[in-house]
Length: 289
Image (tube, rainbow, N blue to C red):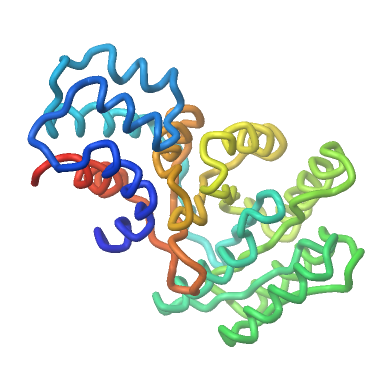
């Protein structure tokens, strides 16, 4: 797992190495501040982290400081239901469709049956791309024509998943409509219809954030959370950015579970996020083991 995290943290690690030059047993407070700034950690958070730290920092002190960010209470608990219905939410370009394929592959690798619902009827390309992935992974998909009512797709997908006793149903959603009000209305309707098709559905609403946007994605998350109430986050494209430290800012600001991170374009390039592994991988670039 550490190798996968290191892959995700690659470019961020390169930036850290430019500052540190040679790994050390201790670093100065000023060096730690520069490292966090260059990794795109929010400055207010950096100030809070540094406030109680000594002028010379060792690995244990750095670890305890960073891991404390993730020690917030998580209330979400996944219900044990079949089908387990997930709705994938986020702006276009964040990697929603690819993330859906990765989730589907992960579930099938774990012996689960999977179905997809092409709920982004706003873009023909979204339906086509999701259908291609469904065919590639040899899993069923419920879709309709571009411009169709996405809530109807949601209802049909859940009804079909119930009838076929599918373990996991993953539903795509539109990322952009003409106005934010339209998008909010559509997503809220999809959720209402999902609950009509199966009480309690969707059982998990996951927000996909583009890791290359760094801390700026926090405002995006707030907007979607206000719209529909997000249950957790998936951060994509971390392997292509030096802004890996933004995970710290995202966790601190949103206090939501980060379920997975994307580390590449292949279907297997999605891994569960573990805070201790993330922090240790970051510190491996700074300190002598």
